Length: 90
Image (cartoon, rainbow, N blue to C red):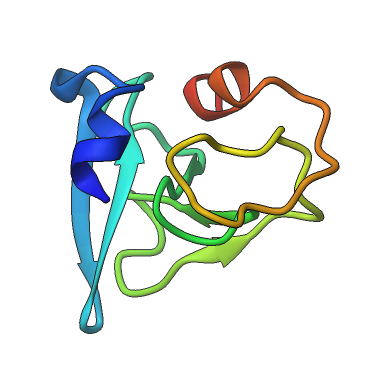
């Protein structure tokens, strides 16, 4: 999975966190201490993580507005926001 993600995102901005027993990957495009949410790249289409607020859990955003992510098999269809814009501007 990580190899597939690095095809689409620059490794210098990728960050990792262990939440329980799960490794999550997010693109810290605004910086590692951004107070908002970053979308989880290897989670459900609406899963978000805040590295400054929610260190022990992820949250959710309403719906799945991003287009299907090419690195995720069986990603839900229906979103209209280009995934590249959605996952780098949050």
